[in-house]
Length: 337
Image (tube, rainbow, N blue to C red; front, side, top):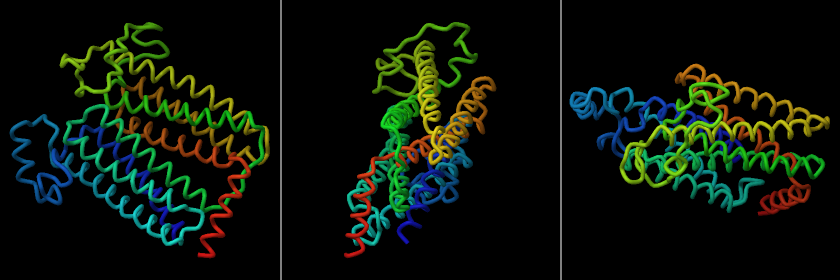
């Protein structure tokens, strides 16, 4: 039962993250400008009069009935996810979740609670880039914990491999985390179209860039810290760093894939990694060349999530053998309890 709940929660967490990207990219993040309800109501249907008044006051503003439904469906699913994670934690505390420690389950509960607070602040603080990016990081952390618990309950044995490949897998995971963070910063600052050509940016290899304003954390959306409009050079710096990160991550992950392809037991993981990496890079290139169409932009977010899960799976498979002994000991203790 616990494993089924974990797998269900993991699938739902992935849906919530991709749906969150869709809400943000379709400019529906303020579809309901309060939290947790919509104009104090349970559904946008019950708040239809308030939404109609907001649309009449500002027809091109962030509020509309379709946007409100997008935002609220995301909240409904996130709430359901929180309840599933709470149920998993209760099973772990009662020692009815083999392979899952109570500490990990409670940490996941704490993460999802904080994630809910970030979701609230995203709305009430009007999409501040630091808060929105933090919300993305919280979602990624939640998925990671659920994925790790799911793999722990599978009791899969670690694969013996050269220490250099294991170290490369860890380094690749860290580099990918930084790259996803850069991608979130690019998206939340609406810098995805700052460079509309490839492989150069604005026709140059090193365009004019403003790193100080680009990576200043505490500021309003589209503004500098002193309240001025964020210059194009700052958006260019954000986009350019994301591109450089993509190159670095691609090199690291392809090197890891080569190491995995050399062994029969890890060849499947190597092929999966190559496939996920090629899909993600292709989506990134297509988004630039086609000027960020919504389906491709959402797919790029989903691709990043799948690539992250692939790297988690690889690192789990390549973990040291003594980690498996600890899992087995935990399972026996739960069984005895």
